[in-house]
Image (cartoon, rainbow, N blue to C red; front, side, top):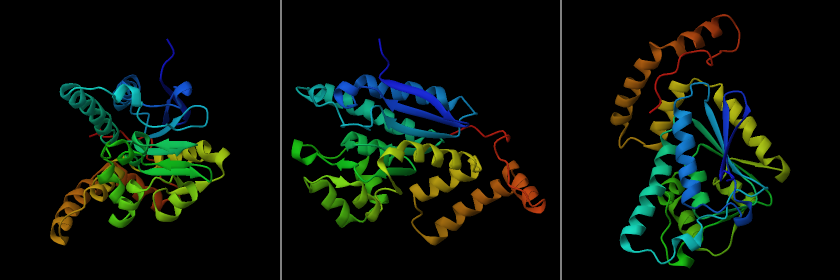
Length: 264
């Protein structure tokens, strides 16, 4: 039986997960979600992997949730489905990896939510991003009303989720929904290159930076307290020791050989 989630290593320290349901335009069903959970569980135990690329096969990221599998659910089945969706969300957000999403072709619904859980989004001029939830009588899921607001303001988020029009790659880049706009044939290559760049950064310091950006402090005093805790750990850790030595020796720092702490 062909795997619906493909795992490979396109570059040193970089893993890649691609949805492999080309006949369904890589629609996300239970098997795809479980494939992501299983792969991310395995990757958590692999210290050689420091960054992750998300994508789909055949030049399509994903048409979103597999609609026929969502129909005619009772209350218990609907809740079980959302519990499974949220297990994927938490596995991605808690992976400790730098995540780059290669948004080739169509990217709809659940797939947009998956991409927004990462750190960096690459689009092309022909990328088509769709928010179909309200037209289906659904509210956005996969954490999108939280992650979308981390990228765009409330008015823009409202426009995106209520509009029937797809968001082009050019618009996504211009409003901050995407981080990088490239020629369509270069989307995956650019995503792998960005993941490779992120994989070279100090993983513990990057993790702490990501956590504070994703969960902003309520006040300056709260932020200063968190900053003090983080910086005390960093200043006394092996990453700063390597960074300082590299600065003094006028060379590039090499953080890859340092033993990473357990990912959280």
